[in-house]
Length: 335
Image (cartoon, rainbow, N blue to C red; front, side, top):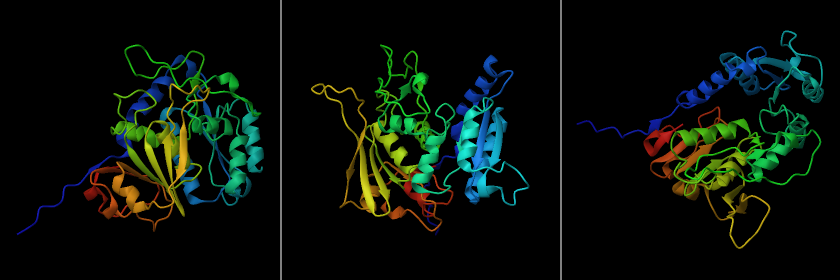
């Protein structure tokens, strides 16, 4: 007598999410603005790591599909043995040259290169006018302070003091986002933003709630607190109202949104705050989480599926599979 197999959660692939964004980009590229001079993106590769080179190849392929010019510049030691591509300059000089080149509209640098503070420094060497990843200090300040719209005139290579602007304006009968006049959206780190777009696509964000608060009521665990993915992602989700449990080696921290109150007048936007959870465990976090996001770049790391809340949404960001093989038997959706 055969037993009935356990139902499996829905598997959502990136191909199911990216279509409307690709359509929007193709429409923009077909407009008069880009008829004669399609934008040019420079990729700067200064590491021999295979995953960085693979990421660069993905970037090139994506640009070709949209009609964006892409040029990969190999600098420093990354040039060795690569058929003479690139230019023989240091990575910082390569960034500065791209900053000054009027034919370059965007710059993407493939990290990690040196790691730690030296990479953070390089992220702020990239001109904010050409930073497509949102890693310049001006954009990171905006991200962590929940500043969503900025005047392009404030983007300066030299640090400048600036105060937050209102989150957004809303039409009287709608909670839809409206860009305030004279502003543009602040650039966000691409991988955390892509994860947010995936969560919007699969319904984690509640469109009935006010813009900027649509993840309220959700508990989300993010495993990995890197400066490129884990930390900015936790801040983004918390700024949208979620309770985020950030898990990293040796510590667990909660990201949550500081509420605005009518009794307190502040010139700053309500944004996330962090609270250490020294007694909290990963198992406890998983048991209460509506969404679990793992971005651990280690093949041996596996999220223990026995601890997952039934029907939770599991998002694998790492190149390796971070969840145990039976994850779809425990989750409602797996991405």
